Length: 150
Image (cartoon, rainbow, N blue to C red):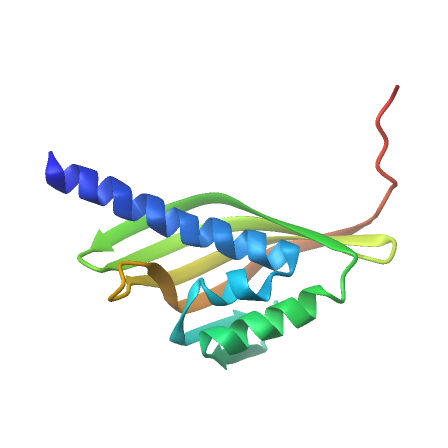
């Protein structure tokens, strides 16, 4: 039926926003990151302690995180699962993810939760309007050189 198809398409587009966010973050693609957010987006990030900071505006959010990620040798953010609740042109999204961030000879592995409000714009695109980033757990380990046996 048409309503079910529309819901499937909308949820697929919302998931595409999440995929583009994680790809843009790890590839340090500021344009791809900025395209994930509305111009008036608000992102609150918890550092893992009692501190948090808020960024406003899609371009500012993308610039901050691309600059931050360039400090690291490599990173990989993987979305583990998402729940998407659609209401008309708004999606309430809860995503669990794991981030691997390499700095020097150490890798930081962190479990994360993202709570997003993703909206459909007038052009039909879906973008993040409000994001809360919550670290859940973390550990560090030494890195090893990649090895593939011959």
